[in-house]
Length: 214
Image (cartoon, rainbow, N blue to C red; front, top):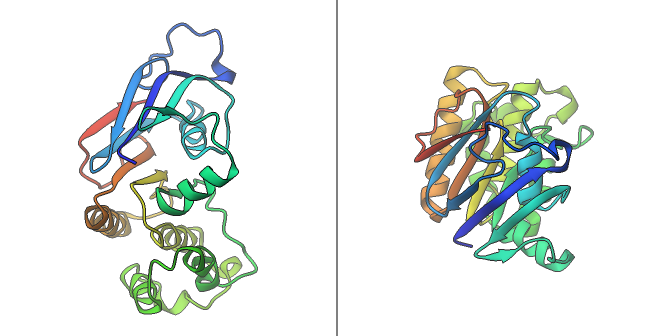
């Protein structure tokens, strides 16, 4: 996948609005593989909805979203499974971890599907993120910031053309923000992937090619 395009897209909840004041809604926007994008927004302007639209979780929008020129609306289950396994790595804002499982078990749920990282590479990520001792702790016993780092490790356990991040550092301090940015940048560079990150304000430490205001 080389390009994700939005053409005159508007969430159904905003129907009837002629001008949202957004750089994304009701505009023609293209995200290219290998480039880094930041979508900064206030709460309630639709950043999580945008991620859900791109990832195929929701389709309550008007306009067109296209992957390499093809409308995503007709895609079936098999096509979406392939996209989510091999083309788009997604970190949802709500993390979607299983609290009764350990941090490592949550990560392995994704890595077993992809076989993308070795056990050592995963443990090295836990170490780099400063939580090596939490790998075998149940998620319910982790702080929200630690959970966010676990979810990021899980997100990176797959091949992809785009890394889609919904507020990836909302619960992290400046030091961990920088660590996350460095790791994501390195992984994206290794795979030649594009990065699309949302944020309330501009608090993501990744150097971006273009910023959009939602």
